[in-house]
Length: 358
Image (cartoon, rainbow, N blue to C red; front, side, top):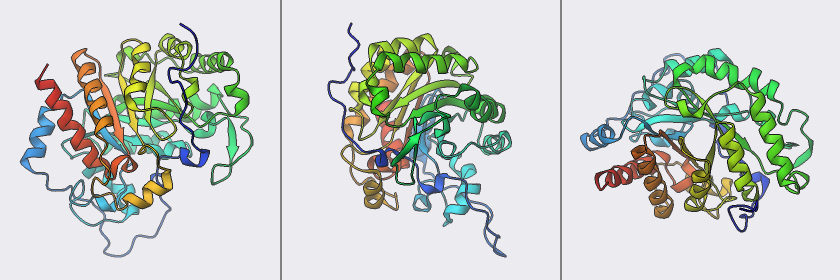
């Protein structure tokens, strides 16, 4: 097999569209708490149908959303009005009581590392069986330094620095989350042309980076954290890359994003890595820029543009993985269809329907 991309043509995009977390995912600014202000967030009153759906969904299928600090989720996840700041601090407890939400993507860690104590605080707020998806800091996953709007300003000296990744990400993450750690995702922002021009060299560089990290076998993914790799350049997803990820016990993370091919095509690449956990981040509606989707879908309380093709492909892949005894992680962003909790509910219904027919 030659080493061209699995995908014939990469979907064009711009670096500014690469972000997939709201500002609310970042560490909230410290503010003086107003006297008498609410300090707890109650969960929504979930109906019997949703609870039954949750009971029918296998425990090793971890569905969730990208972050949780969205006031528009009142009635879907939260039982009362709450500010973004309060939800950032206290909303995870209510989030974890939703019948379907058994995972969440910690997107704030992409922008800056957090401490072991902060990870431990998150772990203490969710029930047993909950498994986090955690994004590695772009300190080590972006080949260039960027301005606020994504414009490159020069090479990043910390790119692929395994010592920095271990000290500021892997070690505190695993120590703080413990058994609640799931995929540790290294999301690589759009790569510069000099890297893309040498695909074999890029595979070798990434393999050296993964080999220098603490070993985390993906075969034990149901019980321990493991590495996953996500790209924003379709051309780098080659058979050579997939074989390397398999050697290093790292999973290919399917990125549903305007820069990447549809889910069904990316799932072909997952199959090439061999058996293991399924990891998907459903980030952005095809053909949309991030900020445009955010403006179009806010306050994220309804499905605005359903994407049945993606949902069907992911539901089928999840059902197959579960039947094969492999755990599943699928997290959805509000910018995928308009409301991440409703995207997850629709996906859960598709997964359970497929399981009944097998």
